[in-house]
Each structure stands twice: as structure tokens, then as C-alpha cells.
Length: 231
Image (cartoon, rainbow, N blue to C red):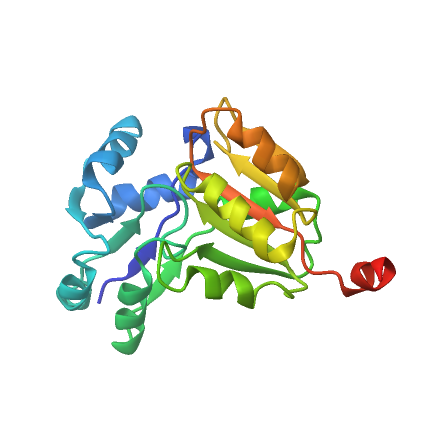
């Protein structure tokens, strides 16, 4: 029987690719990629020429059993996403669960992910935090934010540059414009930016500029003692 490897890929800077990750990809019989066009550039950079197959959220339900059978037949399969660790707001969970149900060995390599650098850079408490990923785009979005109003842990969200202002404004609407937050974009790249302040300050800052790159929003947790002091 083969094995499933989850291999993190750089979130921006190619130097963050690990030596072990490169070796696993070179040794794998098959590499599953979220977007083969994006991954082909990464593999070419490291001179990795193994078979590349598309595996994304639109086909993973149909292909997980077929992939599992290939591993049972002795093939070693490596799963990568466009950036970061597979399974973290990217395809991977269904395949991992299917393999584990079939007693197939699964190994996830340590490596790049956007949420941890953004959390540490924020200056908010890191001992307890909740990762919320992407907010619902439409249905359930307001309810999700309302449910988090009194969350005391530091909160981490992924967001696209096109919805950043909308998210900050909605956070301010339900949590108060003075709630502190941090916005990180282009992590590990040349134009990396980590901007901190109140939600009001961040809305004013990002409304005045063109926003590019992948976004991580880190929100300060609810502080009941602060509310009591104000009362």
C-alpha cells in the first residue's frame, strides 16, 4: 500500500518551500494540485516533473475514491494547494477522511500557512485563538458575525481584496468601530503589509488605496472588562 502526503507550498516566497517537501514531490507517483497551471510553475522552478492531476473543490467528491484505490494499489500520492497547507480553506479534508476510513496512512508535512504569521504579527493574544476561514459570501454572513460578537479569543479570517472593506465595515457594524484589528496582505512577498488599528482606522486607510493580494484579518477578542469600565 502507498501513502498520502500533504505537502505545504509557499504562500508567496518560493524560498519557504522546504527541502523535505521538494523531496516528497519528486518521489511521489502522482501529485494532486488545486490548479495545475499554478502548481506547474512551482514544480518547474524546483525541476519536479512528476505526473500532475487536478484536484479541487469542484471534482473532489467524484475523485477521492479513485485516488484512494490508487494508493491502495501501491502509489504514493502528494496533495498540494495553490498556496499554503492543503485542507486549510483549501481542498484536502475529504481525501484525508476517505484515506483514514480505508486505513491508508496519511502524513502532513509542516510548512507554510498564512494564518500563523498574520496572528503573530497582529500583537493580539496567541495563546487562544479561533480560525474562521472565509466568511459566507451571502447567506449566513450576518449571523456568523453576530455569533462572534462576544468571542473572547483572537479571531482570524481569510478574505479577498475585493471584499476587505465590506468585511471591515460589517465587523464595525456589529462589534463596534473601536474594536482593534490587524490586516495582513502579501505575506512573505516583497510588498508585505501588516496594518494595525481600530476597525474605523483600518476602513479609512484601505478605502484610500487600491487593495491587492491575499488578505488575513485578525480581530481582537471581546473584552467584557473594557465594556464594564465604559459603563
